[in-house]
Image 1 (tube, rainbow, N blue to C red):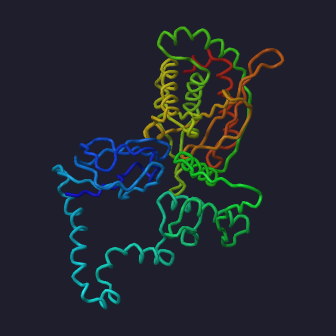
Image 2: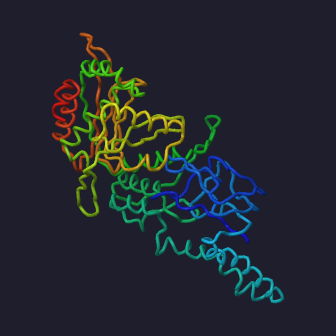
Image 3: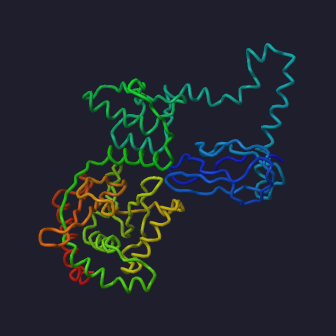
Length: 422
């Protein structure tokens, strides 16, 4: 019995991904639950299991392909397990339907005029044709962005052949309106002609596309303000050195970043506006009574932000262990969707690379992010660390931002005071 295996749901708001590797080939005998594909989607890598045991008769995808949820990726021949017997009629009906089609062959005219047999197959085409007129084809996250920008999605034009409106279409339309003072968008994607020299096109990875879409959404929907300050980390670094042996005995490496996560968590408890989200549609502020701190990690595949959960319940040693674990998982490509979701605040530390102040982009639906530069000695030999706090001005005022950042600076400079406070 033939089973058309289609790519299952991968996660919330994830419509597809890139095929990192195909773990089987045509003719292979596989068992139920065996991993058959590795997919990269939403910055996470995941293995897709086989729905049943059998032999692969058709393999319709290859490494590097982009696949969508619901897309037919392979056909499996073999015995179907009991839970899948309900799906057998769905798989066999398409095989049975083509059989009646040869019967009207002696009547060529009805096939050309009435076209009874092909009618079920092109059903998506009439829907796509009607889409621009009455029904807009767009994913939920695209519709949400349009609402947040105050745009009627019915007026957005798309360059996609299937008529489906993308995030980029909405953003381009919004930019065109702002640039023209309110006129309609005339945006059309433009590719360089190559007159100046050779152009090399390279397909974006799933991680880069996810970063592109998410950062554009954050920048388009959040009115950013960034404030800068400098913290003297001399005492904090001395404390770190005194605690190194204790941490090493527990098998972890204590870093300034792990200590900073603890300090930031204390600040979030003191200033709940920074540990919140905005529901613009309902006009509500969603305060979160949990503290999940995201850590921006630079990997070979691109930027990832794994989350340290319940940071307020972790000791300094436990924090260092959690930071090491999520960083290693991100860099090794073993990060899962659960590791990347649920953050309430993000820290982006570029100190290992260099630089000082910068303007980090708020990681929506969070409302603030702390950027950390490289610590450097001043003229007196004391280590000074540059800090950059970006926040959503819809919820956080400048005075609140200044208080939050100053609290962090004072906790860094007086770590004993911080531990007494917490």
